[in-house]
Each structure stands twice: as structure tokens, then as C-alpha cells.
Length: 194
Image (cartoon, rainbow, N blue to C red; front, side):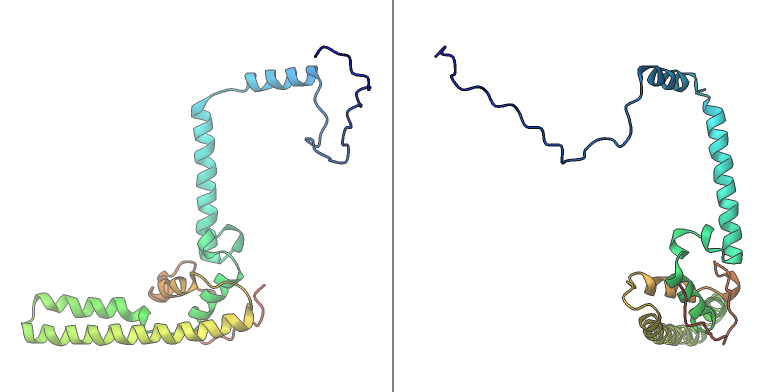
């Protein structure tokens, strides 16, 4: 039990093939203390920090608003960034859709409902029903055409969410769309959007 081993213990082999580590030299004690003191001296003025954060947010919002007017890709919101989304916007802006006239027609059909007899209101309700069917068919035709163009121009790119993006933009009146339309109705679109 308490015998001495006759064989010498083999030295431990250290594997130096793995290159673990932090990728930088360890700072000296003097450097570490200086960095800790600098962090401790940093002002903890919450008002100044909040004011700086507010100023940065205001500047970012102003840049985003300007980008929504000009179409500057760098400052657009995430939902509008990228060549595929830009193509969807341009594709819709070169077309005239029934959906963009839906809001004025609905307004014209609903206002008289408060003043006219019931049989006349029924006519306006039928007009609105026909309008809904026409808009649904128009959206279907637009989506099929957009799908073909996307398959031709952006093969292999995922198109998830683009149908909703297209429909929500198509339902807006042209002059209130955001980002602002960059193409005229009937304009020919370029073949590349990269």
C-alpha cells in the first residue's frame, strides 16, 4: 500500500497544436490599473447620457425620414431595405392598381349611407362588394406577375413576406406611399437590381 513505485512517472505531454487563447497579450498590472482608474473616472451623468442618446435618436430619425422621401438605401427602415424590396416597390409604382382607389370609393359609398334610404344604401353595398372582389383579383394578378419577375431577376432568393409587402403598398394611394415612389407609371424597369 505504501510501496514505492519502481517505474518513474511519465512526464505529462502538453498538446501545443490547439491554438486557444484570447488573441492578444495579457496586459501588465500597470496597464490594467490605469484602465480601471479611467473607467472609474468616467462621469456617470445620466442626464448628459440621456441627452446624447436623444440627440442620436433624433438624428437617426431625421435621416430615416429623408431616406423615405429620397429612397436612400442606407437609412431606410429594415422592412424596406434590400434590392428585392426595392424591386417590389418599383414594380408596383409602375402599375396602376384598383386597390389604390379603394379608399376614396369606400368613402364615397359609406357617406351617403347616413342620409339615403335603405334601398339606395343596398346599391352602394353591392358596389363595395364588387370592389372587394375586383381588388382581390387584381392583387392575385399582381402577385403572379411579381412572382415571375422575382424568379427571373432574383433566382434562389427567398420571397417570404413579399406578398404582404406588395399588398400593403398597393392599398395605399400613390401620393402617400412610403418610401416615395421612385418610378413613373409605365416606366420600364432595369434588368439588374443588385
